[in-house]
Length: 308
Image (cartoon, rainbow, N blue to C red):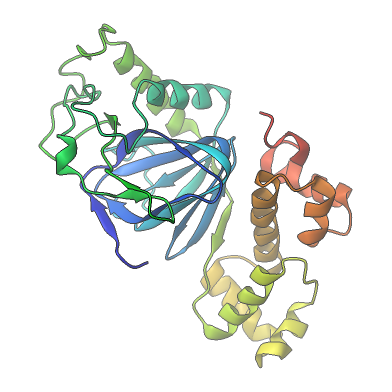
């Protein structure tokens, strides 16, 4: 990922993203939850890709170089955290129930869209204000020439670029809410701790032989050849590939292929492709077989994926 940008603090706020738009490779010194309450968001690091629809969020630990991509009209919500309530030092997909969804939306709703410059943002939960927009430089932009400051309208819990204060040391005087935002934050944090991790990671291979096989299936997820047939195409054995899958991907070849197909299906659905077409493009023999796998993975049918 070239031109990695650095943010001292992960921002909190919201950012609408058009289909296909993205946020370039960057890292921050604090943790972050990213959530799309509309659309589908993918987050890519050197270790792979995580995809989240509206009932999933993605945990990004401090220091992780990552980039975002929107699939469909996406309403992106960001929550920065100094503390690590999940105890995870790697990215992860988390289940988002109705309460956590509304908490994230409410917590980020009073912030101006990220990337819009303004003189001062409201106080954070710690009573600290963000620095002046001039202190931030272009961390967020799409794939074209669009660029804007990365100043967030709100900040996450804990320390920032200019030091920190103990949590709860001063309430949100700028909001006039008498500590309402503090209470909202406390409930949100409690719900994050309870959010179960979901197996929606598509890891990246390193060995050239496995990379070649993964590339074949990325080009055509519906390719139904066996591991032995694919191994013959790349000049190795199926036993070698199976061993590499376990070692590098942390799962079996069939499990990885199912993950790939589910990821691709989410992206196609976000683009408005009909369910039956998605099923065939992604390698399922029938729409009913696809719907069954999708429901078990996400908790709802593909037809409801973008009507929640």
